[in-house]
Image (tube, rainbow, N blue to C red; front, side, top):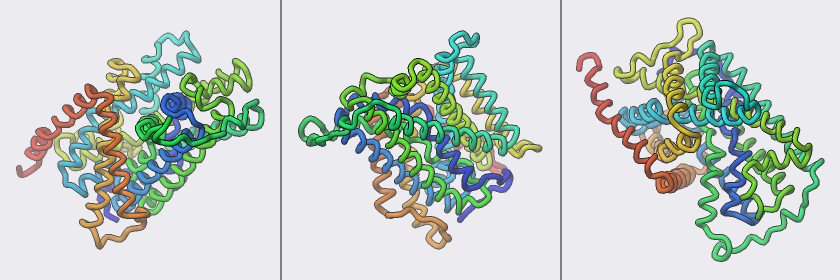
Length: 442
């Protein structure tokens, strides 16, 4: 393993990483995207197959990031991997993309969704959905500035709560629900007939968005007690747990409602709870969704605050963001910078606008990280590895191909947002050279 970071407190362990990964994945997606999947797939067999396939793709990504995290156990995640594999400019461009776009857009979109659901639960809240979103951003930023232990304990509690909530939905749905097992009857219509590969591909887009977040814990690798040992295994375990949960929850949905009717149920979890407990069920599921979103937001704020901090360690232009709190040993300026920019984006955009602002960029860098596995194996052949991606070279090759395919699909679906995002990233090229000239002796 190769590591150079020494100024962050190492207080995270195996189960903290599991909580971070689960917290980063399980949000609103599992409660909303099944209806999007139903727009393209109307057979229960293909619905469950698509969710399983999405889980396999996420697991392939986990294997790739697991190997890279074991080799480079430093905070910054993808920033570190691209820098080590392709050179400092590649790392800089990713760090600039995160600082200028992806981190703030992720925080803003998740907080915006939280504000929307909170207003459904408490419509008389005086600040409105955007006000609630911004208040939550700053509250969680303060929590994570006050110490890594506060952020991680909060995340552990929230992730445990998510697990209990999903388990309850599964058990109650199958034990108390008045569903029909005949809804699972499938004929797997031929791909050349009523189902096509194109439809399967379209269904995978919302599914993979629902699985996204399995790499979040790698951004705080420099704060693990034993990162090279704990990170890879915790990522794989947490991803496997989420895959199991998602398959079971979708089975509950299909038990209640035929696959052909999924597209008309945008709040399908609420429909299930309404069927079980009446109006109070909808209130309960809204509260559960709020807890899930709150957990995702805490994860995003905690981990994404480490990327500008890692960027500042290497590049003079962003040196001011590299300050670590003298008492709490947290990247205080990096966390505050993300909170300020995210608050601006909340005021500027809507949930959909924020979601697609960086969608294509995320999958572009996923493909680059998968290719980094190949480069790292050739560039550091003698370095001891505590974990290697199973199925190499097919695993990273397949994940890189799928990631690039999703990048192209997302870019075609939202060309304006993608063009804007990559224009911002392109500004990083002159900024990189400016930063190089600012280094001592230049």
